[in-house]
Amino acid sequence: MAKKVTKKKVVKKKVTKKKVAKKTTKKTAKKALAKSSVARTNKAGKRDQETSVKLSAMAQSIVTAVHADKEPEMDVPIRAASNTNWNAKKGILEMGDSVGTRQLFNLGQARKFMQTLLHGKSVDELLQADKTLSLRGMFYKSLHTIEGTKEKTFDDQTESDGILEDLEVSLGSLREELHIFAKKRGTMVGNITVVDNGDEINCRKMGSGGYAIPSICEPEVIQFKDVKAKFILHVEKDTVWQRFNEDRFWEKHNCILTEGSGQPTRGVRRMLHRLNKEHGLPVYCLLDCDPWGHYIYSVIKQGSISLAFESSRLAIPEAKYLGIRSIDFERCDLSDDVKISLNDRDIKRAKQIAAYPWFEKNKQWQKEIKKMLSNGFKMEVESLITKDISYVTEEYVPARLKAKDWLG
Image (cartoon, rainbow, N blue to C red; front, top):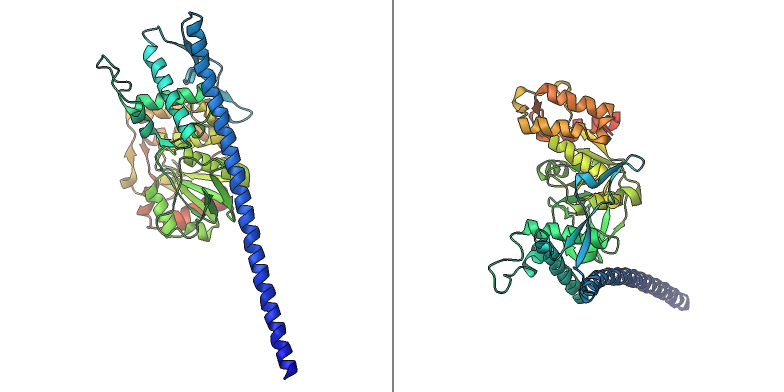
């Protein structure tokens, strides 16, 4: 009997040790998470402080000018093709040094001068309150009729958005650093876990909907865990993404599947950029065979003219164009039903893209665009459905990946 009691006591001790170990592990995990949260908070706080200092400096320069009986003015970097440079070494577009001076007493510039200060004031209020607003919200926050007139501060959101971008480049701060976000557009699923604002989201278990890629994808907001994927397949539209997700392409081929709902937002591009740079994941783009699909690829790869000041954190020079290609009409034996005739606008746009410095000396791309123009028609990725519902997921993309048949 004594021996039996001793055994029971030993078992109880073992169980107790397991419980203690489990509690210790939980405490360690909680401490690590708390420490990580504090680090993110401190980083965000420092960033906000730096942005606030920049805003104060801009405001102070205007006050100083007024006290000195000088005309208040501010310099705003020019966001145009004329002030955009192609850095062949880095493989990205960069903003040049040209600036435009915005003066209060210049009738052609007074409106934009006032709008810039209005948005600057709103951003400062967001920083002080530690809150964020959407682009639409910023438009309404600064919208009012100027006292004694019928003049509104902004005619529409497009005008407001442009001023916010001016404020970004003038302060040398990202939109995220101004506490401004855009509408979510883009989806992700695959072999990765995302920590979004402290919440763990397993992108392997997102059902048919997927994880909605947020507007702000900075490291202090979004972190990555359990990145098991070997590459990223980015598709142009949600309709194509749904086919790949339903066929569980990401599971069969161990990848991450994303879509940008057409022209990808900053959030989508930032997510792709971070996964490519931080985890070395190759990015393959499956886009329509038309000038607009080619342009989307160009933006993902080199950056865009309007956001050239952000290319270093958005562009992915190593991105590959997987398809659909102008030669696919013959090699996939597609029917005439999938042809969409090129119009004058398409032809003009195709020639503009062919003249881009990063495409101009690329023999593969010159051949691709020339072939599309000689065909006289464009094609969508969905045209492959005429072969079979899952032809694109089961045959087309796997074959292109295996053969390394892509454009760079």
